[in-house]
Length: 379
Ligand code: GLA
Image (tube, rainbow, N blue to C red; front, side, top):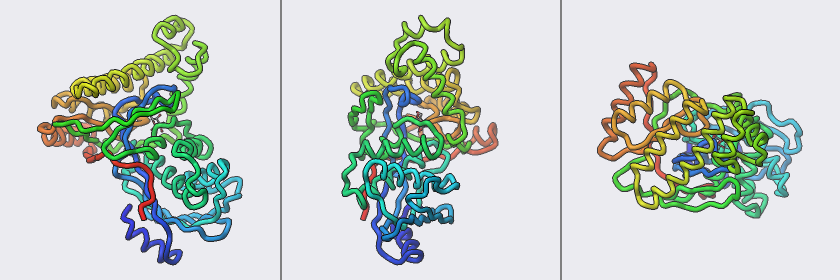
Protein backbone atom coordinates (compact mmCIF):
# COMPACT_ATOMS: atom_id res chain seq x y z
CA UNK A 1 0.00 0.00 0.00
CA UNK A 2 1.53 3.33 -1.03
CA UNK A 3 -1.47 5.53 -1.59
CA UNK A 4 -0.71 8.58 0.55
CA UNK A 5 -4.40 9.33 1.15
CA UNK A 6 -5.03 5.87 2.59
CA UNK A 7 -1.87 5.96 4.70
CA UNK A 8 -2.89 9.36 6.04
CA UNK A 9 -6.31 7.99 6.96
CA UNK A 10 -4.65 5.12 8.81
CA UNK A 11 -2.38 7.59 10.54
CA UNK A 12 -5.31 9.79 11.57
CA UNK A 13 -7.27 6.78 12.89
CA UNK A 14 -4.36 5.53 14.98
CA UNK A 15 -2.48 8.67 16.00
CA UNK A 16 -4.73 11.61 15.18
CA UNK A 17 -4.18 13.78 12.10
CA UNK A 18 -1.14 15.52 10.72
CA UNK A 19 2.22 14.11 9.79
CA UNK A 20 4.49 14.51 6.79
CA UNK A 21 4.66 11.97 3.96
CA UNK A 22 7.95 10.66 2.57
CA UNK A 23 8.75 8.19 -0.17
CA UNK A 24 11.79 6.16 -1.22
CA UNK A 25 11.98 3.72 -4.12
CA UNK A 26 13.21 0.21 -4.78
CA UNK A 27 15.70 -0.33 -7.58
CA UNK A 28 16.65 -2.23 -10.67
CA UNK A 29 20.21 -2.92 -11.74
CA UNK A 30 21.15 -3.09 -15.41
CA UNK A 31 24.50 -4.73 -14.77
CA UNK A 32 27.20 -4.94 -12.08
CA UNK A 33 25.98 -7.60 -9.67
CA UNK A 34 27.93 -8.51 -6.51
CA UNK A 35 30.52 -5.94 -7.50
CA UNK A 36 29.58 -3.27 -4.94
CA UNK A 37 31.18 -4.93 -1.91
CA UNK A 38 34.20 -5.66 -4.10
CA UNK A 39 34.83 -1.97 -4.80
CA UNK A 40 33.61 -2.36 -8.41
CA UNK A 41 30.97 -0.62 -10.51
CA UNK A 42 27.19 -0.99 -10.44
CA UNK A 43 24.56 0.38 -12.83
CA UNK A 44 21.27 0.74 -10.95
CA UNK A 45 18.25 2.97 -11.31
CA UNK A 46 15.43 3.76 -8.91
CA UNK A 47 11.97 2.51 -9.83
CA UNK A 48 8.59 4.12 -9.28
CA UNK A 49 7.57 1.44 -6.75
CA UNK A 50 8.68 2.13 -3.19
CA UNK A 51 7.79 2.73 0.44
CA UNK A 52 5.68 5.65 1.61
CA UNK A 53 5.62 6.71 5.27
CA UNK A 54 3.57 9.29 7.15
CA UNK A 55 5.64 10.45 10.10
CA UNK A 56 5.07 12.90 12.97
CA UNK A 57 7.26 13.64 15.99
CA UNK A 58 5.40 12.77 19.20
CA UNK A 59 7.49 14.60 21.79
CA UNK A 60 8.51 11.40 23.60
CA UNK A 61 11.47 9.07 23.44
CA UNK A 62 9.40 6.31 21.88
CA UNK A 63 8.81 5.26 18.28
CA UNK A 64 5.39 3.84 17.42
CA UNK A 65 5.27 2.36 13.94
CA UNK A 66 2.45 0.69 12.02
CA UNK A 67 3.39 -1.44 9.01
CA UNK A 68 0.12 -1.13 7.11
CA UNK A 69 0.87 -4.00 4.71
CA UNK A 70 1.67 -6.39 7.52
CA UNK A 71 -1.20 -5.27 9.72
CA UNK A 72 1.16 -5.09 12.70
CA UNK A 73 2.49 -2.39 14.98
CA UNK A 74 5.64 -2.04 17.04
CA UNK A 75 6.90 0.37 19.71
CA UNK A 76 10.43 0.80 20.95
CA UNK A 77 12.35 3.37 22.97
CA UNK A 78 15.04 5.18 21.00
CA UNK A 79 17.60 4.47 23.69
CA UNK A 80 16.70 0.79 23.98
CA UNK A 81 20.05 -0.93 23.36
CA UNK A 82 18.48 -4.15 22.01
CA UNK A 83 15.54 -3.00 19.91
CA UNK A 84 12.64 -5.07 18.60
CA UNK A 85 13.09 -8.77 17.90
CA UNK A 86 10.70 -8.76 14.92
CA UNK A 87 12.98 -8.48 11.86
CA UNK A 88 10.39 -6.33 10.07
CA UNK A 89 11.01 -3.52 12.53
CA UNK A 90 14.75 -3.92 12.88
CA UNK A 91 15.21 -1.85 9.71
CA UNK A 92 13.45 1.07 11.32
CA UNK A 93 15.21 0.62 14.64
CA UNK A 94 18.57 0.41 12.86
CA UNK A 95 17.94 3.61 10.93
CA UNK A 96 16.98 5.44 14.11
CA UNK A 97 20.17 4.31 15.82
CA UNK A 98 22.37 4.95 12.81
CA UNK A 99 21.07 8.49 12.37
CA UNK A 100 21.58 9.17 16.08
CA UNK A 101 25.13 7.89 15.66
CA UNK A 102 25.62 10.37 12.84
CA UNK A 103 24.61 13.29 15.02
CA UNK A 104 20.90 13.61 14.19
CA UNK A 105 18.96 14.21 17.43
CA UNK A 106 16.16 11.78 16.63
CA UNK A 107 13.23 12.04 19.04
CA UNK A 108 10.15 9.88 19.38
CA UNK A 109 7.73 9.75 16.47
CA UNK A 110 4.62 8.01 15.21
CA UNK A 111 4.59 6.49 11.75
CA UNK A 112 2.38 4.52 9.38
CA UNK A 113 4.05 3.09 6.30
CA UNK A 114 3.36 0.82 3.38
CA UNK A 115 4.74 -0.04 -0.01
CA UNK A 116 4.33 -1.55 -3.44
CA UNK A 117 7.79 -3.01 -4.09
CA UNK A 118 7.02 -6.67 -4.70
CA UNK A 119 8.45 -8.47 -1.67
CA UNK A 120 11.09 -11.09 -2.32
CA UNK A 121 11.50 -10.03 -5.95
CA UNK A 122 15.04 -8.71 -5.50
CA UNK A 123 13.97 -5.09 -6.00
CA UNK A 124 15.28 -3.92 -2.61
CA UNK A 125 12.17 -3.32 -0.59
CA UNK A 126 14.40 -3.24 2.50
CA UNK A 127 16.61 -0.47 1.08
CA UNK A 128 13.43 1.46 0.19
CA UNK A 129 12.29 1.19 3.80
CA UNK A 130 15.65 2.25 5.18
CA UNK A 131 16.03 5.16 2.76
CA UNK A 132 12.49 6.38 3.34
CA UNK A 133 13.02 6.65 7.09
CA UNK A 134 16.60 7.88 6.78
CA UNK A 135 15.35 10.70 4.58
CA UNK A 136 12.36 11.40 6.84
CA UNK A 137 14.32 11.51 10.10
CA UNK A 138 17.12 13.57 8.58
CA UNK A 139 14.53 16.05 7.42
CA UNK A 140 12.37 16.13 10.59
CA UNK A 141 15.14 16.03 13.20
CA UNK A 142 18.35 16.89 11.35
CA UNK A 143 17.32 19.87 9.23
CA UNK A 144 18.39 17.88 6.15
CA UNK A 145 21.99 18.14 7.32
CA UNK A 146 23.17 14.66 6.36
CA UNK A 147 24.25 14.34 2.73
CA UNK A 148 22.45 11.77 0.56
CA UNK A 149 25.42 9.38 0.58
CA UNK A 150 25.41 9.46 4.41
CA UNK A 151 21.78 8.39 4.34
CA UNK A 152 22.67 5.50 2.04
CA UNK A 153 25.53 4.49 4.35
CA UNK A 154 23.15 4.57 7.33
CA UNK A 155 20.89 2.14 5.45
CA UNK A 156 23.79 -0.16 4.62
CA UNK A 157 25.01 -0.07 8.25
CA UNK A 158 21.49 -1.01 9.33
CA UNK A 159 21.68 -4.17 7.22
CA UNK A 160 25.10 -5.02 8.64
CA UNK A 161 24.50 -4.27 12.30
CA UNK A 162 20.81 -4.88 12.88
CA UNK A 163 19.72 -7.38 10.22
CA UNK A 164 22.86 -9.42 9.61
CA UNK A 165 23.20 -8.97 5.83
CA UNK A 166 26.69 -7.73 4.88
CA UNK A 167 25.44 -6.03 1.75
CA UNK A 168 27.18 -3.48 -0.42
CA UNK A 169 26.00 0.07 -1.02
CA UNK A 170 24.16 -0.30 -4.33
CA UNK A 171 20.56 -0.58 -3.16
CA UNK A 172 20.58 2.24 -0.64
CA UNK A 173 22.64 4.39 -3.01
CA UNK A 174 20.08 3.94 -5.80
CA UNK A 175 17.11 4.52 -3.53
CA UNK A 176 18.51 7.82 -2.29
CA UNK A 177 20.12 9.16 -5.50
CA UNK A 178 17.62 7.99 -8.13
CA UNK A 179 16.69 10.41 -10.89
CA UNK A 180 13.71 10.04 -13.20
CA UNK A 181 14.71 8.61 -16.58
CA UNK A 182 18.32 7.98 -15.56
CA UNK A 183 20.38 5.00 -14.60
CA UNK A 184 23.49 5.62 -12.53
CA UNK A 185 26.96 4.18 -12.76
CA UNK A 186 28.53 4.16 -9.33
CA UNK A 187 32.17 3.45 -8.68
CA UNK A 188 31.87 1.74 -5.31
CA UNK A 189 35.57 2.23 -4.56
CA UNK A 190 35.62 6.03 -4.90
CA UNK A 191 31.94 6.77 -4.38
CA UNK A 192 31.87 8.77 -7.64
CA UNK A 193 28.85 8.36 -9.85
CA UNK A 194 27.37 9.53 -13.13
CA UNK A 195 23.81 9.69 -14.41
CA UNK A 196 23.14 7.96 -17.73
CA UNK A 197 19.87 8.93 -19.44
CA UNK A 198 18.02 5.72 -20.13
CA UNK A 199 15.86 5.99 -23.23
CA UNK A 200 16.47 2.77 -25.14
CA UNK A 201 14.45 3.55 -28.24
CA UNK A 202 12.61 0.46 -29.43
CA UNK A 203 13.44 -1.54 -26.29
CA UNK A 204 11.82 -2.13 -22.93
CA UNK A 205 13.11 -3.30 -19.61
CA UNK A 206 10.86 -5.95 -18.23
CA UNK A 207 11.17 -7.85 -14.98
CA UNK A 208 9.85 -11.36 -14.59
CA UNK A 209 9.26 -12.38 -11.01
CA UNK A 210 9.94 -16.09 -10.65
CA UNK A 211 8.02 -15.95 -7.37
CA UNK A 212 10.77 -17.97 -5.76
CA UNK A 213 10.88 -15.82 -2.67
CA UNK A 214 14.26 -14.16 -2.37
CA UNK A 215 15.57 -13.01 0.97
CA UNK A 216 19.16 -12.29 1.80
CA UNK A 217 18.57 -12.66 5.53
CA UNK A 218 20.03 -16.06 6.41
CA UNK A 219 21.06 -16.73 2.78
CA UNK A 220 24.57 -17.62 1.56
CA UNK A 221 25.02 -13.97 0.48
CA UNK A 222 27.50 -13.31 3.30
CA UNK A 223 29.46 -16.44 2.31
CA UNK A 224 29.87 -15.08 -1.21
CA UNK A 225 31.30 -11.92 0.22
CA UNK A 226 33.67 -13.87 2.45
CA UNK A 227 34.99 -15.81 -0.57
CA UNK A 228 35.80 -12.53 -2.29
CA UNK A 229 37.49 -11.17 0.81
CA UNK A 230 39.61 -14.30 1.17
CA UNK A 231 40.83 -13.99 -2.42
CA UNK A 232 41.58 -10.28 -2.02
CA UNK A 233 43.55 -10.97 1.18
CA UNK A 234 45.47 -13.78 -0.49
CA UNK A 235 46.34 -11.59 -3.47
CA UNK A 236 47.26 -8.76 -1.11
CA UNK A 237 44.75 -6.12 -2.27
CA UNK A 238 42.02 -4.24 -0.40
CA UNK A 239 39.20 -5.46 -2.67
CA UNK A 240 38.90 -7.52 -5.86
CA UNK A 241 38.59 -4.28 -7.82
CA UNK A 242 42.34 -3.91 -7.27
CA UNK A 243 43.05 -7.41 -8.55
CA UNK A 244 43.58 -7.84 -12.30
CA UNK A 245 43.38 -11.04 -14.33
CA UNK A 246 47.14 -11.69 -14.18
CA UNK A 247 47.18 -11.32 -10.41
CA UNK A 248 44.25 -13.68 -10.06
CA UNK A 249 45.83 -16.31 -12.31
CA UNK A 250 49.15 -16.02 -10.48
CA UNK A 251 47.35 -16.59 -7.16
CA UNK A 252 45.21 -19.44 -8.44
CA UNK A 253 47.36 -22.37 -7.19
CA UNK A 254 47.02 -21.11 -3.62
CA UNK A 255 43.28 -20.50 -3.80
CA UNK A 256 40.38 -22.71 -2.93
CA UNK A 257 38.77 -23.69 -6.28
CA UNK A 258 35.37 -22.31 -5.31
CA UNK A 259 36.81 -19.01 -4.10
CA UNK A 260 38.70 -18.76 -7.40
CA UNK A 261 35.49 -19.16 -9.41
CA UNK A 262 33.75 -16.49 -7.30
CA UNK A 263 36.60 -14.08 -7.96
CA UNK A 264 36.66 -14.93 -11.68
CA UNK A 265 33.01 -13.93 -11.88
CA UNK A 266 33.67 -10.62 -10.08
CA UNK A 267 36.59 -9.62 -12.31
CA UNK A 268 34.51 -10.44 -15.37
CA UNK A 269 31.60 -8.40 -14.05
CA UNK A 270 33.74 -5.33 -13.48
CA UNK A 271 34.83 -5.58 -17.14
CA UNK A 272 31.24 -6.06 -18.27
CA UNK A 273 30.02 -2.87 -16.60
CA UNK A 274 32.63 -0.94 -18.57
CA UNK A 275 31.63 -2.72 -21.79
CA UNK A 276 28.00 -1.79 -21.16
CA UNK A 277 28.93 1.86 -20.47
CA UNK A 278 30.70 1.97 -23.85
CA UNK A 279 27.84 0.24 -25.62
CA UNK A 280 25.35 2.71 -24.14
CA UNK A 281 27.46 5.55 -25.52
CA UNK A 282 26.90 4.05 -29.00
CA UNK A 283 23.25 3.21 -28.24
CA UNK A 284 24.19 -0.40 -28.99
CA UNK A 285 21.52 -2.18 -26.99
CA UNK A 286 22.20 -5.55 -28.55
CA UNK A 287 25.68 -5.40 -27.03
CA UNK A 288 24.22 -4.33 -23.67
CA UNK A 289 21.98 -7.37 -23.82
CA UNK A 290 24.83 -9.70 -24.78
CA UNK A 291 26.72 -8.59 -21.69
CA UNK A 292 23.63 -9.23 -19.55
CA UNK A 293 23.51 -12.85 -20.71
CA UNK A 294 27.21 -13.21 -19.90
CA UNK A 295 26.51 -11.88 -16.41
CA UNK A 296 23.80 -14.47 -15.96
CA UNK A 297 26.11 -17.26 -17.06
CA UNK A 298 28.68 -16.12 -14.50
CA UNK A 299 26.13 -15.72 -11.71
CA UNK A 300 24.74 -19.18 -12.41
CA UNK A 301 27.94 -21.18 -12.98
CA UNK A 302 30.70 -19.36 -11.07
CA UNK A 303 28.94 -17.33 -8.40
CA UNK A 304 26.14 -19.88 -7.95
CA UNK A 305 23.38 -17.53 -6.89
CA UNK A 306 20.77 -18.54 -9.45
CA UNK A 307 18.14 -21.28 -9.21
CA UNK A 308 16.36 -23.55 -11.73
CA UNK A 309 13.23 -21.38 -11.94
CA UNK A 310 15.31 -18.33 -12.83
CA UNK A 311 17.54 -20.24 -15.27
CA UNK A 312 14.37 -21.34 -17.01
CA UNK A 313 13.23 -17.72 -17.45
CA UNK A 314 16.62 -16.78 -18.92
CA UNK A 315 16.40 -19.77 -21.24
CA UNK A 316 12.97 -18.63 -22.43
CA UNK A 317 14.42 -15.19 -23.08
CA UNK A 318 17.24 -16.68 -25.19
CA UNK A 319 14.88 -18.80 -27.23
CA UNK A 320 12.50 -15.91 -27.82
CA UNK A 321 15.30 -13.71 -29.17
CA UNK A 322 15.23 -11.31 -26.22
CA UNK A 323 18.32 -9.06 -26.41
CA UNK A 324 19.49 -9.62 -22.82
CA UNK A 325 18.35 -11.36 -19.64
CA UNK A 326 19.81 -12.25 -16.28
CA UNK A 327 18.98 -12.78 -12.65
CA UNK A 328 18.85 -9.42 -10.85
CA UNK A 329 19.98 -8.45 -7.36
CA UNK A 330 21.48 -10.64 -4.66
CA UNK A 331 20.11 -13.86 -6.13
CA UNK A 332 18.61 -17.01 -4.65
CA UNK A 333 15.27 -16.35 -6.36
CA UNK A 334 13.56 -13.09 -7.15
CA UNK A 335 13.31 -11.87 -10.71
CA UNK A 336 15.06 -11.62 -14.04
CA UNK A 337 15.73 -8.32 -15.76
CA UNK A 338 15.17 -8.46 -19.51
CA UNK A 339 16.07 -6.05 -22.27
CA UNK A 340 13.43 -6.75 -24.89
CA UNK A 341 12.74 -5.29 -28.31
CA UNK A 342 9.26 -3.83 -28.07
CA UNK A 343 7.73 -6.02 -30.76
CA UNK A 344 8.82 -9.16 -28.86
CA UNK A 345 7.40 -8.25 -25.46
CA UNK A 346 3.95 -9.80 -25.69
CA UNK A 347 5.10 -13.12 -27.17
CA UNK A 348 7.98 -13.34 -24.69
CA UNK A 349 5.76 -12.79 -21.67
CA UNK A 350 3.24 -15.37 -22.94
CA UNK A 351 5.95 -17.94 -23.47
CA UNK A 352 7.60 -17.24 -20.09
CA UNK A 353 4.25 -17.67 -18.37
CA UNK A 354 3.49 -20.85 -20.21
CA UNK A 355 6.85 -22.51 -19.62
CA UNK A 356 7.25 -21.42 -16.00
CA UNK A 357 3.83 -22.80 -15.19
CA UNK A 358 4.45 -26.05 -17.06
CA UNK A 359 8.03 -26.66 -15.89
CA UNK A 360 8.36 -24.94 -12.50
CA UNK A 361 4.75 -25.26 -11.44
CA UNK A 362 4.57 -21.55 -10.59
CA UNK A 363 3.65 -19.02 -13.25
CA UNK A 364 6.05 -16.09 -13.40
CA UNK A 365 4.71 -12.59 -12.98
CA UNK A 366 5.76 -9.72 -15.26
CA UNK A 367 6.57 -6.45 -13.48
CA UNK A 368 6.53 -3.21 -15.44
CA UNK A 369 9.25 -0.83 -14.40
CA UNK A 370 9.87 2.82 -15.11
CA UNK A 371 13.00 4.58 -13.91
CA UNK A 372 11.93 7.03 -11.22
CA UNK A 373 13.30 9.55 -8.74
CA UNK A 374 14.97 8.92 -5.39
CA UNK A 375 13.96 9.49 -1.75
CA UNK A 376 11.90 12.62 -1.16
CA UNK A 377 9.21 14.34 0.84
CA UNK A 378 5.91 14.05 -0.99
CA UNK A 379 3.64 16.37 0.98
C1 GLA B 1 21.87 -7.16 -2.84
C2 GLA B 1 22.74 -6.27 -1.97
C3 GLA B 1 23.58 -5.31 -2.83
C4 GLA B 1 24.32 -6.06 -3.92
C5 GLA B 1 23.39 -7.01 -4.66
C6 GLA B 1 24.13 -7.86 -5.65
O1 GLA B 1 20.90 -6.42 -3.50
O2 GLA B 1 21.96 -5.53 -1.08
O3 GLA B 1 24.46 -4.58 -2.03
O4 GLA B 1 25.45 -6.72 -3.42
O5 GLA B 1 22.68 -7.85 -3.78
O6 GLA B 1 24.63 -7.09 -6.67
